[in-house]
Length: 188
Image (tube, rainbow, N blue to C red):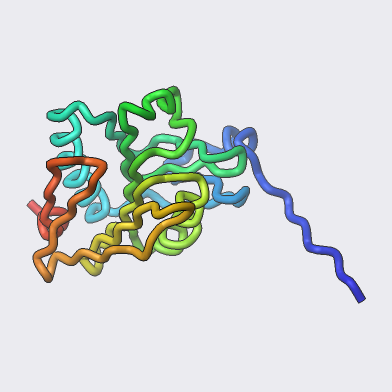
């Protein structure tokens, strides 16, 4: 006996535009509506530290544009995400409009208890599928940064950097960036 594959309705960008502006993060990942509450203080401090460090290097060297959430990134008609931080290089500046229309060069997601599954599984797969060059999953609880870099059609095995080991983040996307992992998590 054959069974028919189960079909499900995938939401689109038109549906996304009707979502409420209620202070929570609404995203579409493979046509599924994903909602996360507003981030906690630790999350925001980490995002701020990363933004300042990246913006300094990007501005000094004229490498592109660094953007903080909330900013819609349209990866497909069924995938509209809001990464915590993103970098669009000068070569891809055509993606910048009212939203980012296509894959940024670098996406940074700061994991929190309410977003961990979405960031590490669902969104990571979408970033890989739609051509993001590099993804950082930053984990304030463990004080680690996992870096996924594009290798061919997908991401290579992640590089895990730790504050405890004294590791530093460097990337070919931002020549001159050398960011101590511990500095990302330092609470001033």
